[in-house]
Length: 375
Ligand code: MRU
Image 1 (cartoon, rainbow, N blue to C red):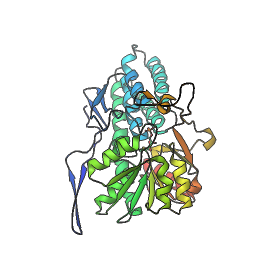
Image 2: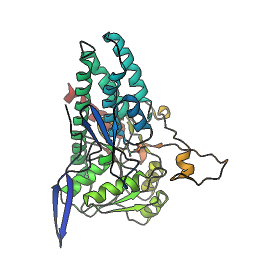
Image 3: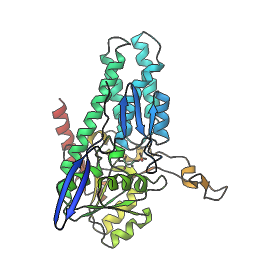
Image 4: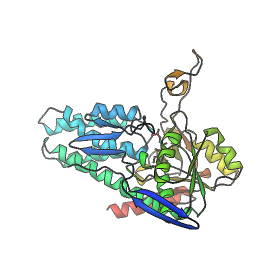
């Protein structure tokens, strides 16, 4: 079945004098879509210069798109990985169901390893793999896997709306929000996580403006966050990552709001490298720091010392647009994520409610609510 994967209605804001009219218009950004058994993903490495879709027809193409960050953002990677496992069936040439599932396991592991830090990918791929146990024959695997991937996609869309709903009351009319990396429509299947909160507040008629960090080295903030907010007519300014403490010190920020790639049961928030210094500065200057993520980003198993921080290619730091900037012979470190401890986090907005301090306790009770609903 063809699915218009994600997308959301774009927001158009008209202000005249003191009145604000918010209209949902046409189509918002659609980061991924499924057509005739082919996954089409917006190539995020080309944004904002070009809106171009890359066709992903095989497991290898999906793995490559995730590794090279043509698709990125924790919930979006999860959805793409879910469909990717279905595409891996093209590599399986046996009629023996047990053997097919053994091979599928191998492909699931390969997918999970493409980006090790975010937990949504593992969660989604495991869910699709587990759905293969319902198939009675090898030929029926395709339907089981595809329908589970579709269920994950729909769930993530719904979650993003809920995050917006629960998070919007945290923002007041006139607030300026500082965000880091891209936790918007482009990181999910539409609407976003941190930016879902901003979008929902704007839809309620609040005037919200955003300060987006550039987000070195791949510039998700300036290329993606600023692009999608401008697309929706939400005011946004870009700062260098290193300017974050200064804008906080000057009182230019009312709230910090970021996404997350993995949230631990203790309330530790793993997110794009550079989040921790923002959280430290926010604490120092008394600005609330919130993270927003669906429950699929929660990892109740791991402690912070065991979170694998993805180390990416040094060339992302040493080169800019193909030209080497760092002197030859000098090496770079390129950790892609950092971990913000719960003492610095004012709250975590999820799709089932907002967890406040003590975060461990409140995340635990939200998890109980999730379990009750899913039973
Ligand atoms: O390396 P990326 O671009 O995939 O990292 C993305 C982030 O860190 C986002 O903040 C995170 O995935 C939250 S997504 C809603």
